[in-house]
Length: 328
Image (cartoon, rainbow, N blue to C red; front, side):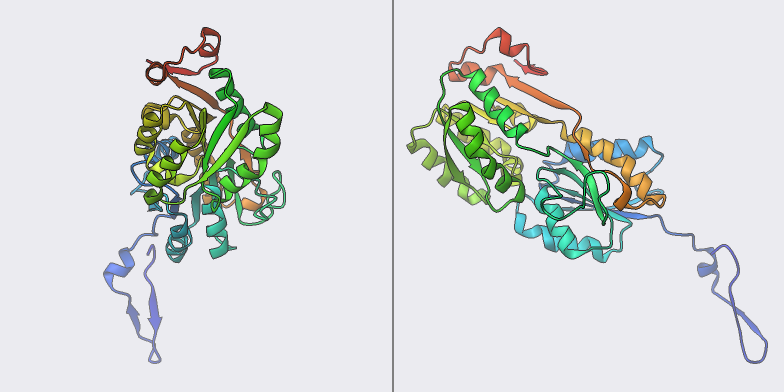
């Protein structure tokens, strides 16, 4: 404490608090981070968040304490982990994925929740009143706000592999973001002239069974959703896809770096870096209710030519010129 504190007794004597108590300094603010994936899968995102905080003068372990919880791709763990973080009385909690935000919002309507990488319209889910004026305890940064990203990814897959008509879609219908994508698919597939079949996957243990079913289906390509269970196990997922010898499009560049053919989607680490500005504002007293929900600004197409060669694909020069990065 900055000043000596004392208790005036009935006889007028003053008793000083212990020296240790007098010397105690105000604690650093605590923020929580709730990630839908594993610590290993979230490395780039967490590094970007830390860099963004450092740029604003925050030192983790110094003038800021950060508590992390990782769901390891298990959606059912999110509510429990959110409750653990809220019990620590944080100044705010950063939450990855749509399912994570929904789970955290079910735990608290008071603690500010900063969503990063959600993929479903938060207005439709009842998390915010509007993008410009959220009105409650939720705001943040979205991967996408409409069906455009789904159509874009499927369109790029068709352009990269001309002639495909039958696509397998691997998704977790229990995850809010994936459920939204599946609702969009019928109209998008019709517009692009594609037939599709959905393969549901919820846990790591289901992957082999699901990909065995895909192998028996008459498919020409695959579309893999953003669901955390795929992201956590992306090296295993890309190896299973490679065995099927099917071209596939993913949502994050890490899949392509792990051997996948191509990815198209927002730069997720950039969203984590940008979120540091909202952390700063909230710690300085601003309310999430007045901080507008923002969208991803950077989208990237990444292509792995080694994967293309393994599939016997000849990616056109015109298509390669569209890529933000080509892995050779």
